[in-house]
Amino acid sequence: GNSVTQMEGPVTLSEEAFLTINCTYTATGYPSLFWYVQYPGEGLQLLLKATKADDKGSNKGFEATYRKETTSFHLEKGSVQVSDSAVYFCALSASGGSYIPTFGRGTSLIVHP
Amino acid sequence: SAVISQKPSRDICQRGTSLTIQCQVDSQVTMMFWYRQQPGQSLTLIATANQGSEATYESGFVIDKFPISRPNLTFSTLTVSNMSPEDSSIYLCSVDGLAGVTDTQYFGPGTRLTVL
Image (cartoon, rainbow over all chains, first blue to last red; front, side, top):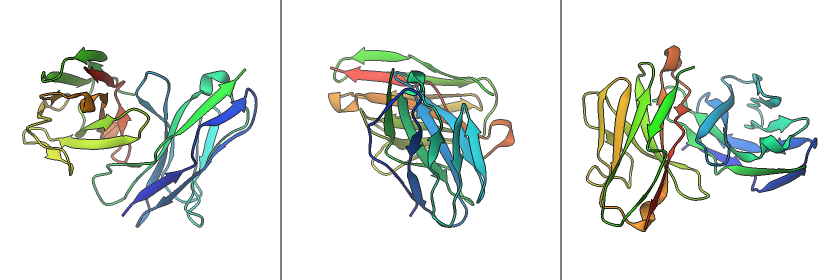
């Protein structure tokens, strides 16, 4: 079946540091890949998505590239801010079905001033 | 993008009571879903809310405990029945089919439930 594996958190960084949150997946076919963000006390927001190999999703300074050869979709940001502190979820939705996503366990990011 | 709202945003309930959570979307959508997020955990799908027919429940969730309604293409309710402290979670509704995009789910702000 489909699965998503994210790096364990929390990830703790100082402001303006470089961020990488690793995500790898297992799926049949050609899934769409997503990063969602959950700020404290809020629901999930779609951060970015990519629908085919080598696509790069980007939003709010975050980027992730769909790497089919390594089945990865790592999230990166060049310079994090305190306001980026949140939980980040990697997810996939499989083609040919109802598109109900499979979520990773989430990675907590804490950014200190 | 569409606005998805949930009511209530949070509640504290007594054991043995029931709570109904509402999800409203400001445009018609094909699919609506209900998730549970237990403290510090990822999301677990409870059921797909089908318009005009009974909801489709995932393994481990039953209609008697989590009855769902979906009377039209913009509204759904989830009831958490006969609550126990183990039901303390965030309950999230989500939708897809917004603007014809069928591979992406968008989430409401969630309902934070505490059962004493």
